Amino acid sequence: MTSDKKTVVCPLLMSTSTVVKFKLLKVGAKLPEYAHDSDAGFDLFSTESKTLEPGERYVFQLGLSSEIPQGFFVSIRDKSGLAAKHGLHTLAGVIDSGYRGEWGVVVVNTGDKPVIINKGDKIAQGILQEVAHAEITEVDKLSDTERGSGGFGSTGKR
Image 1 (tube, rainbow, N blue to C red):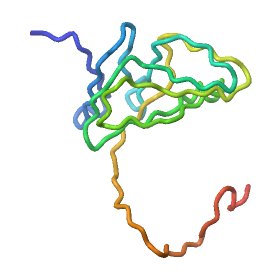
Image 2 (tube, helix red, strand yellow):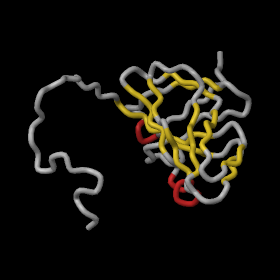
Image 3 (spheres, helix red, strand yellow):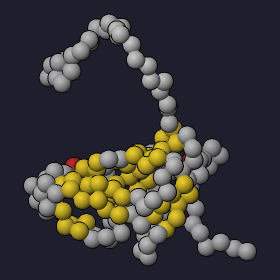
Image 4 (cartoon, rainbow, N blue to C red):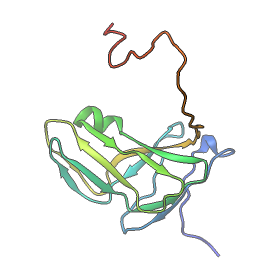
């Protein structure tokens, strides 16, 4: 019995790759894919067309769901070209291993011109990462550091 399902593997990692299973939910949906063997992120594609006005935020549906292995998650990140050329930025970028619903990517247009996203366009990238669970402990005092509570530009501009 042959399968018509497609597997996308990064060749550099073939001996130690982690399998992430995807289910296509819509006609025209595309599996994520790595553009280059050495890329950390795999490209994610829109299943819909939309013009994003300046300041507008929209959830683009990807038409796929996944089974991410326990102990991992996918971090959704900007495509550098879309960010640099058009001011597009992704928000809310974590897909947990227990989530089985349709993936969506929240995109906001921080630029000053409308941006047209067409069905099939790359709109973000996903990076598979290991989960590190913290032991959450309440304490009465934290240790001192050189930095202390300095933040929000406290180290200066230069």
